[in-house]
Image (cartoon, helix red, strand yellow):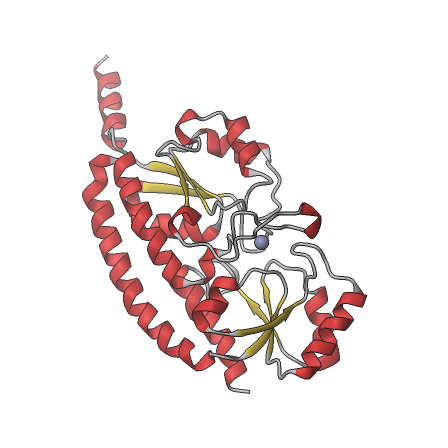
Length: 299
Ligand SMILES: [Zn+2]
């Protein structure tokens, strides 16, 4: 009897009432952010990696199981995950992470979205009816999301609120300093003509004032035909395009096609945390992104 009591009290001591928040993150950038703000008090599961297309993920049983046990779901929103998140939410049937509850957080709610279409026609491809959801390509958006996410962690786990606050203060001040450096480096890239693959870079392009001459996809999310690529080639020949941008997860075919005919370098950006060796966290993501883009300036 005595032995049982000791064992029980040890168990209780190692898992206090306000222990770890279990967080389900849809994409690596939000997993990384939750990790930075939550520190030791959160355990984060990330549903996708940088080499998967976040528009198209299978609602696998393992994802459902993770969502069932989560205290908080952190996703991009703005319909990026429209093909799989609603299925997970329904099948997991976890009432504390449903939309409208404190356990459900969508980053896009805290950012002003670009390119909100007047009308939506799904025949036009992966059209995002609420606006462009690829918000993590502008570091100022990360700041806005961090400011909204921190109080959410404190609300769900009030016992650790002061730690969340100090983690957040530390992250924000580091981010602010890094941002000044990125802004400075980015200012030298303004106006550089580029071609992109998918419409994934609107926020990056706006931030750095890059000149997006055209895109390789005629319809978002749909591989372009050779006929269409030929029209892209004509346009590219009329301007001095310095780089073809694509995300680590995207099919290289179209960008290589254009590269073979123009010699314009293909720049594979990490797009999210884990997209290359340098992008190990959000700081590395932007360090690497700028470094890769700076090659266009040096040519
Ligand atoms: Zn998209």
